[in-house]
Length: 525
Image (cartoon, rainbow, N blue to C red):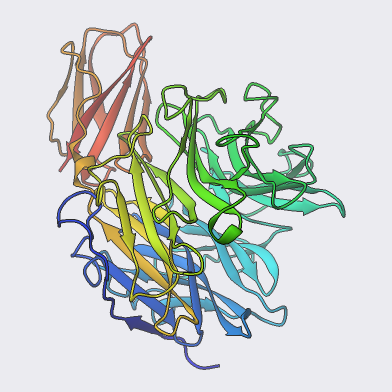
């Protein structure tokens, strides 16, 4: 096999529709004017599926590379690669900067999902040589020998992974019984062993709807460890239905959510067909799902699709103050088909979605597409060019965003795909965008009877209160809980919080009282 190397490709952005510095403008301190396009040297197609911002400030990209023959992708091998914060390739990671596992005899190795663990190691779900696995590495790209067999654990099936607060690992998957396709969830302990207390010896299979095919596309874990899952269910693939499901911590359906745990939401006019691809959870417990409204009679007479976002209250009812009774369906950019694949919520409750915007038939070009909604569902016109980012990298025919994360400094990272100059093979594109307004979040509520000091602070924060407080939480700018403290409500006076284990940066302190929450911004030097 030829040695693995990365070929970096200079990027010419043919559309730069906004001024520098505003939210949604390309961050010129990253890559080549905010963009890095790369391919694996031994693959003619390189698909980056996931992006992860690590606690050491570097950026992880994972997916698979393959050969393309007569329109088919063959010999798929998984890759994980690492970039420094400025977009330079990190050659100290893995072997010469990359982890690459070839397809093997069964013809397929790829990464489906990844998450950073509290101990800073990174957990992946994927396929190695055609077999579903979990594998774990450290931030230097070295396999963790304490996890499974030299860092790898074989599992029955997989898709997406998410962590519960006790570091239990939820793995989504599918089960086909020969006629019906069901959700299949498993739970693993932090050391990779199956958790026999979950479902039936660690696995639960659920037929969530009366349709034959139930497909789960994404999962998220609530603060109470309940599991939110979204996807699509159907009898006929041209008549798909968007579905959201909530499971209890132990994997049983949560009957307090929706209709005994399951909701089919009609998007747009009847019959309201569509699909959910991704989901996120706001700090207030509300849930947003993104995907597409699907309808007949699209461009060229084919099926059409429009971007859709649906917002639910924590009990599964639609949030009536969001969009049109909880639903937002966006017009397409070029009067053709737009497809949304990924969603990320900000701490200020704004919502970023990403995917592609297509041109009308017979023009097959699509543009990389991001847009941002305000908390009420209206388009945020301060983002990009009147609320949107559109780019055709190197004027290639296919451009799409597939995953979004927000760095601790508020900047937006995306991974996506773009065709090469021959329009035959895919390369991976990584972009970073400015997002300065996220660092200027004002207090949600001012309460002069609660005083915090010093702010900015170095090691300790003091809270002087004469009102009752039951709980204090500190979140970083990307919504990760950094500190939790229960407070005795009978004792009024000064509360001390130690921040010595929290990195420098901007944080939100959430103060819970009996009937309200107060949010204050704090700075750790």
